[in-house]
Length: 288
Image (tube, rainbow, N blue to C red; front, side, top):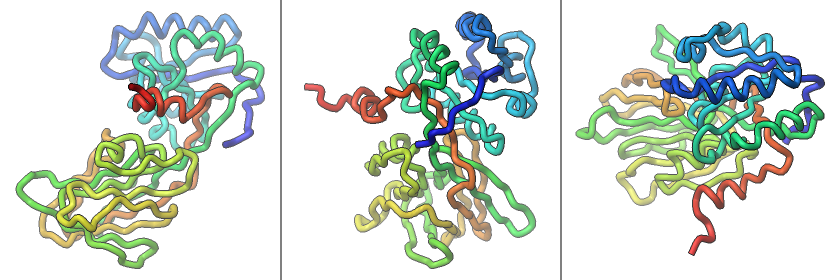
């Protein structure tokens, strides 16, 4: 957990849930709450186009603001964190639907949260991200992920073989449908649905979870935040999916490199926010 506080919030930048033009009245209501407290509000140009309002080019907005705000669900926040990587700005998630693991500020708490922001009554959690690239020999495709990198077969007819190395030392060959490499934050996403472990989100580790492994000895593995190298043993292409939002093709001669990113994602929460309370509610722990 970081003890860093914003000295003074003068300007915030919003990104809205995509393909949701009906979110405009809610955005305008929340925008007014910030502005009545003397805080200028910018809106990313893609979100602005969606609701026919004036917007600001995304990178320009990130440079100008003190705080980034996602209005939507966890997917909106995921995208915002990835796209703003390198700007080192805290992100606040306002939830416009059900309680999320990441976007955890309910609409009816926005007024109080803004007041707490102005007096520094909040906390910033620093969570690890993934930095990676695909090396195809003559091209290098770089990416960042907040939740996970999923390596999957594009067709159901072929089992895949993946050679995995940690810090250049080979340690396993995965046979099956694919492999998930997730951050602790991503442990409650696809990893969880495949029986992978839930890991406390401020940890600095990777979770490697095989998808439908051909051998029962292939189990989920938690490892330090090292550098991974993945290449194919089988002759078929694979799909590499980043946070469930972007995808790349991995050819037989390509290599995939993954490591912990230099910068962390900074998520801004109310001081009373409890990760375990969210887990209990989302996973119905303790229900009869």
